[in-house]
Every structure is written in structure tokens, then in C-alpha cells.
Amino acid sequence: MISKTGIHATLALAFLSKLEPTEFAGATQIATEVGAPPNYLGKLLKQLAEEGLVISQKGFGGGFKLAKPANKITVYDVLEPIEKVSKWNGCFLGKSKCSEKSPCNVHSRWSKIRDEYLSFLRETTIAEVAK
Image (cartoon, rainbow, N blue to C red; front, side, top):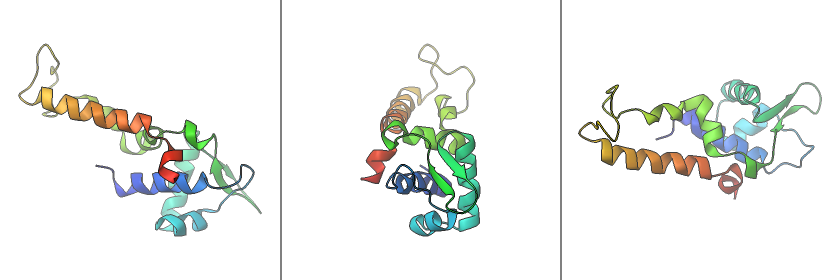
């Protein structure tokens, strides 16, 4: 249910969670650890820096580190800018007026699965992923 990009981002942050608070890791090092192409991962990490999840520092000794503790970053925080998982709140069949009062044919089944999955993403932290 998560794209390869989402998996790489999640694994990258899990790797960064294992660094000392003052330590940075380069995109190439992180890419090697998570099995992603370095240039691709570097762009992904820049996007996550723009979202405030990682800090980017250029120059000698630079690279990336978490912007806040791993137990304060959820998998949802990581995936939302990449996967736009919040859009899953809509109707499974794409109907504009699907709700509890006016459900589509699969509304009750889909809403349970969707809500459970989104809860999982919101409640699972990068610290848990990194264990």
C-alpha cells in the first residue's frame, strides 16, 4: 500500500534516528543503507527537509539529520507529503456524495479499512520502525 518512494523515505528516517543528535549522514550513506539510488534519495530528503522532518546542512560534516526526536515523527508525517494519504478520506468508488448518510455500495467496508490504516500510520512512529 506504500510506494517504493514512501518505503525509502520511512527507512531513511529510521536510519537517521540511530545517529547521535549532533551527527549528520550524507545522502549516499543513507541511500546505501536503505537500498535507494543516491540522487533520488537526496531529492527525497530535500523534500522532507522542506516539510520540517529533517535538517539539511551543506559542506564538510554536513548531510541530513532528524529535525525532531524519532518518537515525535509518525509514519503519516513521512508519507503524507509523498503519498498524499489524506486523500484516502474520499469514497472508494470516487463518488462526491458518499457518507454515512448517503453511502456507496462499499462505504461501510472501505471506511473501516481506511480508518484503521490511517490510524496505524498516525500512531506508528519512526522510533518504532527503527527498532
